[in-house]
Length: 322
Image 1 (spheres, helix red, strand yellow):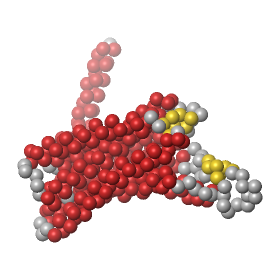
Image 2 (cartoon, one colour; image 1 turned 135 degrees about the vertical axis):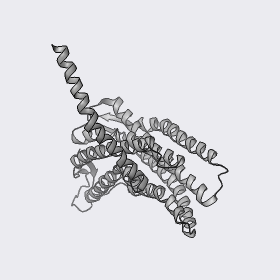
Image 3 (cartoon, one colour; image 1 turned 90 degrees about the vertical axis):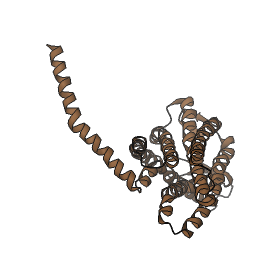
Image 4 (cartoon, helix red, strand yellow; image 1 turned 135 degrees about the horizontal axis):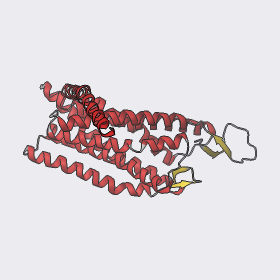
């Protein structure tokens, strides 16, 4: 969709000061096809990751619990991408209910991931820096409790965001203009507050880990650190730009063009995060090994069981036909 701004371009000669419409470059086609690509990669990667985590003992219970919930969060977020892809390639044809419902699902995936990442980081902080867990059983219960709380809070908060969405002109699923300021501020704050907690915890973790001489201890926080860093590399610029958009109104067409270009690039980077976690988990040699074992099992199944199954099915069909 083309974005239009009612602006006065400072660099144009407009003696009567009348506002006019700026025609901003259209990123809809690029966004649509990129979202389809993200959907395919995310579904394959996160499904395989969940299969490995569920069927194999590749990680300790607490880390596995957090990563498993993150994979589910990514899949929930990914479930909305085909709708946004179609929306960008054509227009919104799914009605007002799905406009609100898909927005709610989008925010469930978004909020749950940041809350789970915060819980994962706090767990690492307590384990590495404070070393205060009285026993492993309590740590496991806390991990499960944090994940449950993350889902409950995300599901409870997301309808409020969805209520600000509406279908305009039977073609656009957007936040109504009166709600845009609060919408951008809320999303930004729900990102930056956990971000502050995570930054504090990780600075403490890094200092403690690099003071230690135990190389295994450094490796123990490696995957968690990469997952958290990747989240903020992907989502940080986008949320920062949302915060800017809530406070800044471009004064000319060129400024509006730059803002819109930056917004679309940052959104693509943010949405790519749903594909990242499975790739980062492959940094673990154990996960790579078990994934290869899982793929080998599927290959053997396809080569041996499926041909036999189809042969017997064909024989039964011929018997019944005659």
